[in-house]
Length: 281
Image 1 (cartoon, rainbow, N blue to C red):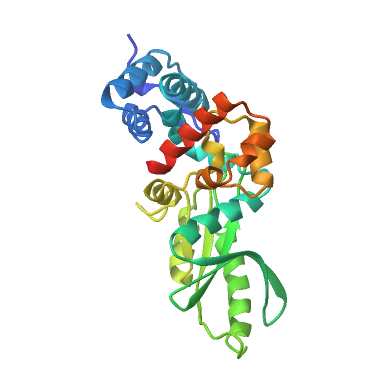
Image 2 (tube, rainbow, N blue to C red):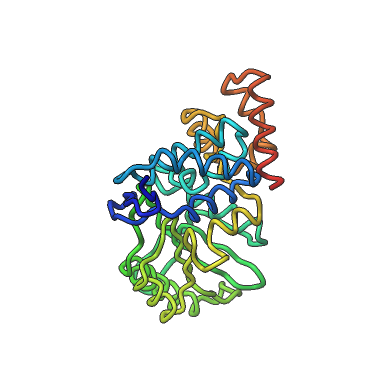
């Protein structure tokens, strides 16, 4: 019998890599599933592997097995894909980042026009905390496998410097401008990270900084995007996003939107139970 851990699997970028049982197991543990369920799913997925299987096919099988057991496990497991579903435009992602910052103690504004020394700039998110102002640019990708290369922080750094040059000359700005941020839902290349450190830009991606990336912050704060729900349809999620409901926590407060969607009381109860469990986690 073939050792399946020597099997080549295909990433979303098209790159080949060796299958890792540990990575599959860790991602399932992250969903909150207990040891027995994790091992049962690992065993079933492992038996179905073949050379050239895509990471998406592996994900879909594991997701279906989790959802069959408990929808909240499936929701947590699909977090990364759920953030891609905030697209196709980047605006819901900008609002999502703003909400995460808000729950971290920042005062936030989305889509702010700031004057630079040379030109005006529309900034995705402006946040202030502890008497300092931070400007944040979001780079959203709605396709997996696309990373942010060094061109992104280079471009954003030049915009930040232009805003800062004007900021310090404006007497109305009583708070100093702090670091510029670059936030993406994917990953940064090593060159992008190196440039960010050198230029004193704060970079935030799916898994960077280590143990404090988007994934970690979302789990730590229980701030899951509405798109993680395994019970809401794509149409229903888009309706909620169009009403600026980007967090599961917001739907708990604005549950009347489910009535606008014509969702039955039985289904509404199940959806809210799933979302409340996510927020508590």
